Length: 150
Image 1 (cartoon, rainbow, N blue to C red):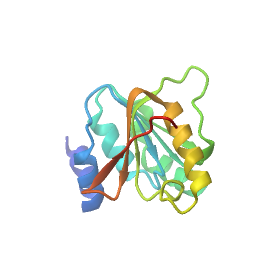
Image 2: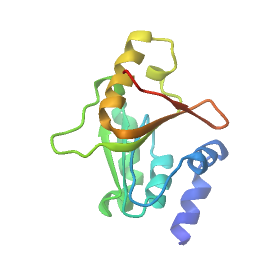
Image 3: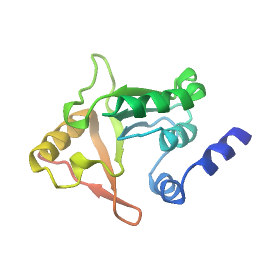
Image 4: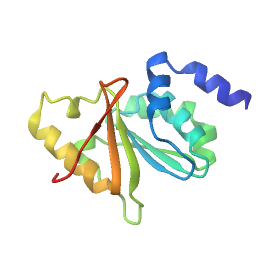
């Protein structure tokens, strides 16, 4: 358990509040969009029990940093990483859909680029299970975004 305590302390107060606010439970499949160096993904992986988190980022540098810091979670099969922009994201052949998607400070979803945002929401909707949910930062501490009709 000591490792889990260290991971929690590595999170900023803002990210810790976000992880606490997510409706996480064992067995869920989570898609983190814009994972950066992976601190939040590692904490989510720790809380999912038999679940799995796929953390994506458009930056090769961010994915390399996340991979370097996440060896235990990757080896245990609780975390995987993929370099891809959300507006280009697609499930791989045979990849199961996700129950939850979470995006914190992701430019494609901040409203400044409507066409990219529309494509990103379509890709997220296609990657989620029928009752899947999308959460973004900006609420207290999260907002849920409805994807019906995307």
